[in-house]
Image (cartoon, rainbow, N blue to C red; front, side, top):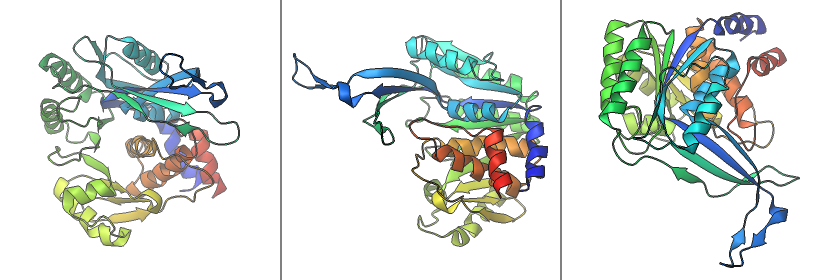
Length: 340
């Protein structure tokens, strides 16, 4: 990827319209000062004193954060939050992202806001230390009324978008946004707009997904296809190529420190290595940065290999941001390509 080619692609980001359909959550960070630790008089247990609270969109919101950092012109979050304090914070955080349009983001009393609460011990001379996370999730099926609103939004946006991103972040099927009904609606969208770029990622695996571009990690590839978990990139290439041919769309498989594989339906499959590590890392959010950068780059006209090169650069930037779920902006990416 030459700096000139990257600049040409990056100029197109501002013209793009991308919908992000999926599980938006609130990432709430509690920064704890260890020097202020006390012992509770009532329980005799340690008390962690929080000296700063910060919140940002997580889950599908991390993808939106990365699209905003790239300067994507219009970003439409399609998901839900609850009528609770966390939902209020999440909406404020989403509204603060450049380009975000919350017209199709649902606030409902029928759901609670998916929240990751992350206590961090803040040390002056070393990276933050994350303690046990406190999660708030929905464990019951998403009500039909909420599903209908999500499905209707997907249909309304289909004719206006350059790309869709689908993210399934929940542990239990049909308790989040990407329910069977919503996936059926996405299939209908594809039938009406077969040219629409749709990239999907799911922590529970992508088995049974409509004919969309699939993005997964190697463990998910192994669960989906039986490809050995310790297979090398060269050993995995035929499996990824066959999956892309079957899907009729591009397939991307991240390989942690070994980079990324990308295959096209025509049988072409390529490997782009990861960039070298430059110090302490935090891998949280790297996969979502890859998804956002792959999608924006492909929508801007990048080849599969170019999109993977940009995605690997973004992942490298994000993993070196400690104590937060980071993003990669155009200036950050440009500096890596200029450095060669």
